[in-house]
Amino acid sequence: MATFVAIRNKKQTVGALAGVLKYVAQERKTRQGDLKFVSGYNCVPQCAYIEMLTTKRQFRKTDGRQFYHFVQSFSDDDFLTPQEANAIGLEFAEREFSDFEVMIATHLDTGHLHNHLVVNSVSCVDGRKLHQNAADLQAHRNETI
Image: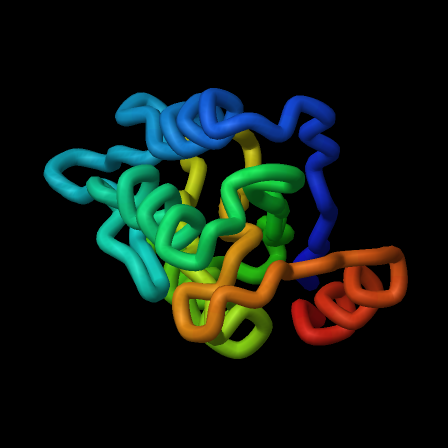
C-alpha cells in the first residue's frame, strides 16, 4: 500500500523551486543503468524549471507560494519495478493535478521506491493558483491507496 505525504517547504522562492527540482532529479537517486526515472506531466523534466517560471510570468503570478512538494512511497510488498512506480506517479499527477506542471522523480536509493512530485503552484491552463489544505492532502491519500 502506498503512502502520500506533503513536504513542508517554508522557503517559497524561485530559487527554492530550482533547488527542489535539482534535488529530486539527482542522477544517483533516479538512475538505474541506462534508465533515469524522471518524468513530467504538462512539462518536459529537463525544462521543468523554465516552463514553470514561464507559466508564472505569463499569468503574472510570480509571488507567494511557488510549488508543492509531495512524496508517494511504496511498500516492498507492492513488488513494483522503478518503471511501474514512475508510471503510477505520472498517472497520479494526471488525475490529481491535471492543469498543472508536475515533475515526477522516482528515487531508488533507499530501502523502498518512492516518487517525489513537484507541482507548480500556477495552472498552465488558466493561471489559477493551486491551494492545498489538510482535506486536500487526505483526498490525495485516499486516491493513492
